[in-house]
Length: 253
Length: 352
Ligand SMILES: Nc1ncnc2c1ncn2[C@@H]1O[C@H](COP(=O)(O)OP(=O)(O)O)[C@@H](O)[C@H]1O
Ligand SMILES: [Mg+2]
Image 1: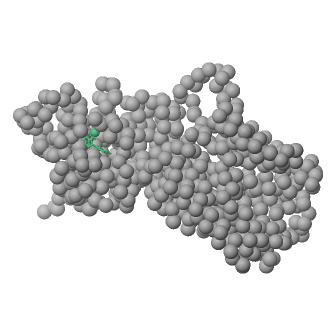
Image 2: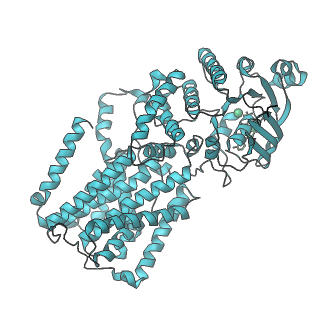
């Protein structure tokens, strides 16, 4: 008998409040290793806050977060990255005064562990190939000399995914990865995430408003509403639930 | 290196060699202090220009470097050993300071570094072993390989060689993965943390390296000035390199150097013609910062932009200026769970 690996993410009883406003209210979430899991819900449901708690940006007021079996509830964000967690933000966050290429270089030297080397430029030279490959993979090759602040929101999101991928994560958190992308870019991104998942078997946790993306990628769905989990399950089943349809009636997205 | 870069470097070397003949021994002391200011300001720009760390206490490390050389010069330490000691002492005191300021950033950090430097100043003033208020006089560099440094020109060459070594080190740092990462930290420390960068540790290393450079500059000043007093640690000594790097341009490697030469020259020559020279320097600073917020070195880029309007549009590199240095004063906690985090303003604004 083989032992099953611990879940990639295990969130237990997490409560997160902002100045009296409860963003997460006793949230439970388990994502088995190797799964593509989507968290959906209307705006303000707490999806981004949940990602921030998992990535180490916010410490929950109550509850615990385990990643690959390890309790990381009070682990600093940069150490979670070393433990294999990478994220892309809902509003893409890149280094605005750097070129596309330089942005990815920051991530590559951090991943290689050469970012602390101040006495030699070798780490930057060794980063060139992986940077070029990541840009090719995200179809950003033509934009590599472009200042990041001059990019469209869709290009920024792809740049951020490129930066996350070079970290070679075991768990990838994508907060509305296709927001601001054209339909073609969206399709390409979905294809890319799918390809990546089939090749590396990494775990992907994503939020998304575009239901086509969700149903194209996710094996499991969790519906979040006002900080609480409404249900978790198979996308086809969840889609048909009356309460899920109801909370989406008001929200046009 | 580009052909122009090589030509510029050769010109600088030639100029340094013939400078004592051109300038005459009367003015050479002033030029010694000017090249030392070049090194000091360049070291401070690792903090302001690269890492976005607004330190107002760099005089502390400059001062301890100067005192270190002053103390061992009495025991006839050879020059290289004494200057390496200045580098080490400057770095160690800076590292200790970075531990004391570990949890602070922005304005709180700036104030804390100022306070620590002033505390050191007060302490040094009271310690008899360091000469108290009067400091340590009679410092001379013992002759090295038969070169004696009572000779003004030789002292100039000593300063220039060590300043060049210091600049080389900071050039190397700027072009290293570490320097690249500091640039990222300056722009968005929290984002850098989510790439696996331990922001506080990187800031501490940058602060230590800048302290090493300040220590070397202070050590050279001790040999040049031949007397070290607590004034080397006074807060005005921290402010001067900041004015220099703002004048020259914080986003250029040579910005602090240009600012240092310019300000030193102005202080020296204006002092001889008018008593209200500080007033004129204040006016100049104001004019430069208003008309050329990115420093004097941005003149070619500014002219080019005026000539070829929007040539590279929004895509060309933007150079940073005062606004960015002050922007470094804003509150921004790195993504670190050890301390409670301030809510993220950009995310909450966009999620509604
Ligand atoms: N940093 C913050 N400070 C204060 N309130 C926040 C912050 N982040 C999120 N919130 C609030 O928490 C709730 C959940 O927000 P969020 O997690 O962004 O929802 P979603 O991503 O599902 O749209 C909202 O009411 C939002 O206003
Ligand atoms: Mg959100």
